[in-house]
Length: 236
Length: 329
Image (cartoon, rainbow over all chains, first blue to last red; front, top):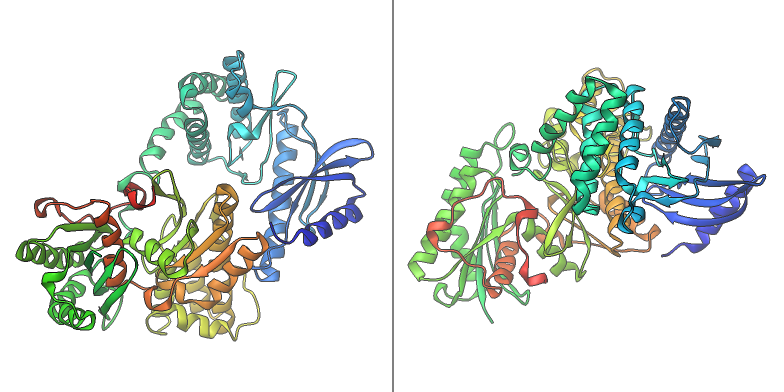
């Protein structure tokens, strides 16, 4: 990758903004850079939305600010609802910086791939958590087994970067549809087991609304991008 | 060296190209239907295609210096596209294949845009940004097919620009007209920036831009500048997501809107920041054309992909990711 020098600049910028120590880049996504470090002895992860030089400065600043603020709000609201998520330690919306507590543990993805015995209970607990989030009008937007960390037998949901607030059944349905699709591509053999336990947990949190949302999944699949009917107006 | 004659007629362009699978393009003759008012009318476009077909075919043969008899196969874009238009190309292709007793090769129009871009830029395994009047797709080759990583959820980028330009009386095609005004814009007006995961949505952007224009809430230059900035940045963002997700190291821009230097500048900046190579398809081969069908047809032909005339029905909704791409295996 190019621009190593530029990345070092980000690190010093992070240091000066929040007084972070022991910084180490752990991931460079399309939108943000993830940096692990310590803040006064607390193990943290800093999510830094990198300025994009291809966007007009005004537009870039507006987007980074809005997205950082939204993610912080979603995490705050989720935590207040009693859901295991990283805690917001520090926010600088102008710089697009979000500092969160680091969740030590194993990703659900690897846990499943190494043959976890506790799948049913975990999936049900995750379903319950997502149900509570939806009750609170929080749509995660990117539910995958990479975004669930298991610590001491308890699942934590991370990365609300694509999340938003909505009470619509449609949006909740899309959230579950994406989760199911992620299971299909990452754990094809376990989809039915995981999803049925997940749905059971989801029902326990949402009551009769749950059925409506679960029914939506099939409808959404039918109009998904791999189904010809939806394409009618797009291809010339 | 097999020579393939390719016929394009998916939308407003009727084209005939002659090419080999090595990428030699012997002819590329195209005629574009221009609506007198409003947008493309499928039946009128098809009429145009029927009218110009003999002349375009004759010119292509003349340019190539080869005779019809020395052509090895006839390729045709069977879709995706507008039914009435597709039928013109398909009819001519079936006729030629039957008359000359040559194999018929079905070509997917989107795959052709991708292959001609790879040929023209020399990039081997890029993330492809395919933008045109009717398509906005981010795709790359994974396990035997071009998989769609992101696309528009409603209208295409070219469609957005064309419709906006038409409503304002700026003329067709929309992209150069809007960009010309945009170059003189200074202030960014807030417009809906709609990226949903890997996908983009342009319809809200069009509605808002047209409303701001009607209400004269800002100068036309500023509005065009904001429209271009917003629409292109959305596209570059999803292209970057595809690049990060697939770990590929090349990006290519293809399709009619590839002629936009504003868009290619933005993609180049993004690619550079990620350490990826970036290139744009030759402007001559950016819009719909016969050569890309001929070349892709030649690739398919040497891989043994031919169909009998009876099975050459048009496929108006033929998805890119349904197509097997054996020549890249």
